[in-house]
Amino acid sequence: MLKAENVAKIHQYYIALGITSFLIIVLLLRFFQLQILDFDQYSKKANTNRIRKVTTSAPRGLILDRKGKILVDNLPTYILNAIPGEISDKGKTFQLISKIIDIDSLSLVKSYSKYYRGRFIPTRIAKDLTFSQISRLEENRLNLEGVYYQQFPERYFPSLVRASHLLGYVKEVDKEIRENLKNPSDYEFGDIIGWSGLEQSYEQYLKGSHGVQFYQVDAFGREAGYVIDFPPLKPDPGNNIITTIDVNIQYSLEKIMDRKRGVIIVGIPETGEILGAVSKPDFIPDLFTGRILEEEWNDIINNPDKPLVNRFNQGLYPPGSIVKMITEAVLLDHPNFYPDSTELCEGIYQYGDRVFGCWNTKGHGRVNLTSAIMQSCDIYFYKTIAYYDLDKIASYFRSFGFGSETGIDIEREYIGTVPTVEYMNKRYGRFGWSTGSLLNICIGQGEILVTPMQVFNYTNILATKGNTFSPHFVMSNEFFSSKKPLLNDDAWERIIFDMNQVIINPKGTGKNADPLINGADIYGKTGTAENPHGEDHAWFVGWINYENQKYSIVVLLENSGSGGAVAAPIAKTVFKELIKNINLAEK
Image 1 (cartoon, rainbow, N blue to C red):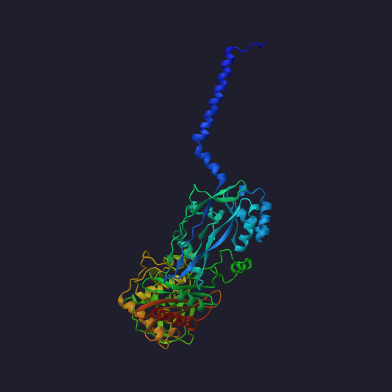
Image 2 (image 1 turned 135 degrees about the horizontal axis):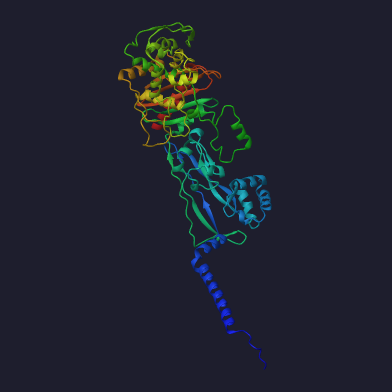
């Protein structure tokens, strides 16, 4: 047998052998790296292909009234998600989904764009699906690769009250919201976050922590059961909060304020607890849960009465005569002032080149301090201007809580305006205003602006001689004492006596607020605040002492006229409802 001549030289043989050995070694090392050193990394990638990680939302904490009745609960609803990287033809898939659940495909695309944040991260495309829609999706499951549904806890309002401004509302976290959060890693797209009211103020208590569930998926992204190797992590529900609200009192206040514009606040003066608070017009509590129609939403935002505005926190109003007790305190602090001396009210008063009128154009005749408060005489305070100046009266306004936040546990509280000499100089120039401005300010008119919540705090200060706490909606021991004006006991007693005369004296402007119930002592003050934009605002402030317990009240009715004629009768109705609820609770 012939043999071919071996022409390869020995050194060539060794080179070929060396290259071959080198390549084998490189291959083995690479194999070692992939299988041993980088096992975890590639194992995770492989698991990503076969395992779907689904975040389960934590139910938010409940919001309860002071007796444990549920004001805000959670209602399970269904949402539809898609894994972008698992959908081969999005247009076709969305068209199919649209046909199955009868939702406009443009709405699906819009939601997809809003919540998209990665190819393999679940993206919400629809929410609030009914059981019927879920059933139809389940029937077409094999044709919907990369699409799945899950339960989602949505806010639900089971009580009879609306309480929309104090409870607040939530929003879904989208790209814009998440980018502006201080802690964006705590939220995923589609989560809900408190956006106003107690939902916002107590977000960290209410929100809870996410859970995780792992599903086995096939090559088409269809779920094929749970992954045994990865046990689920259950969501941690948020904490419940107990409010100071009495749901029965809140319901009564909402009925009283039906079809009106304004505010009613009722609370306990000694503690600052708020039993009920209504700002009207308001909105339906589930406005932002997704069930509202577009037409209803447009009606809300275009409503000239601004139902989304929280009037007790953000409404700014001239207080009118309800702050005359502050001017009274300034007068009583002056050593040369005598409260029993009288001034003549003839209905008008000329100061410099200006003429100021009293609300009673016929005049009140001769009045002293008590009868001036009782009949809300303006001329009396005009004539006693020599006993105070603008900065002094401003300091007293501030000592009663005006011009600063009350500390209420709801965000975005306005502080109003307490004019000083510096303020007036900045606004009008040094020579653009005169001492005559003080005549308006001392009776609660002019540049002074207050919020109803500040007025509630002021009323609590009067009712307790300054021994109260900042107003609040949630039961807690962390609230601070309110400001305490430095008045002597005689001054406090005089102010309280005069406020009682406002109610019980036949000439008192607040006599229409007296419910005439045995064992109930009423103290109050009416106010009629001039409004440059329309009719006057009507005020009533005061408290009732019933069965050794005090309950404070603030009534504000926008553009309604006289405080004595309009607000006082509303206060009377509130007092009656309050006592009725107290008696029912004792049975």
